[in-house]
Amino acid sequence: MNAGFHTKIDERQVATLTLARAELHNAFDDALIVALTAEIARLGAMPELRAIVLAAEGKSFSAGADLNWMKRMAAYDEAANLKDAAALAELMRVLDTCPKPTIACVQGPAYGGGVGLVACCDMAVCVPSASFCLSEVKLGIIPAVISPYVVRAIGPRAARRYFLTAEVFDAAEAQRLGLIHVIDENLQAAVEALLVKLRAAGPVAVAETKALIARVESGPVDEAMIADTAARIARIRVSPEGREGIGAFLAKRKPGWASS
Image (cartoon, rainbow, N blue to C red):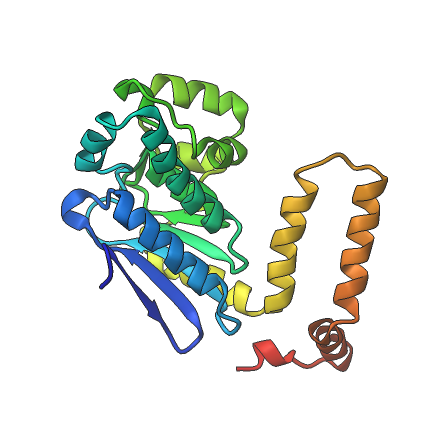
């Protein structure tokens, strides 16, 4: 146990990072934010790790900001608030740009920053009873540092509704909006189905594909974009993993990373 979460890495090199502040609905404060950021960065840098599952204990996935932390923030001046917000922004950035594939496993309500965590993960599964809310405006604040990731996930039109009304929406609506990919009462089975697919893919290719997606969504399809994508595939084709994958396909065998 460490600062409100724990991590378990199984024999398949899949890490499950579990929020463990059930009594506080897995709300996060400044200490948890710093610890989570460091842990995600550590896992992302492990060469052998194949995937990260972000889960939570208790009834809620995450209620967002801890009330006691919010009380402290209310007494901060603008400079102190900027430093505090920058730490949460860094957590979201590190999770979003983690080179390992990430799966949010949502067993209960996700509010505010909790929705941000879900949006930063590559994939998200939830139970049918899960609920979601961007509740910040009800508190007289805004969903600022999570907004790049949530707007990207659900689109600006939906954001105009749910950011402004702070209404609760259910799992079916979250899936329709693109925040959630799979709804299943059996969360473990849903996660396992995704992990099977991820472990069949080349780990370097997965990391490179995540970087590719970030690159192509950030700019126009111009000469620079075209040249960059061509350079990326050329580099991967001649890499050890690329040669192994193509060779295995031609030989009709499993590649080395999928043979175990």
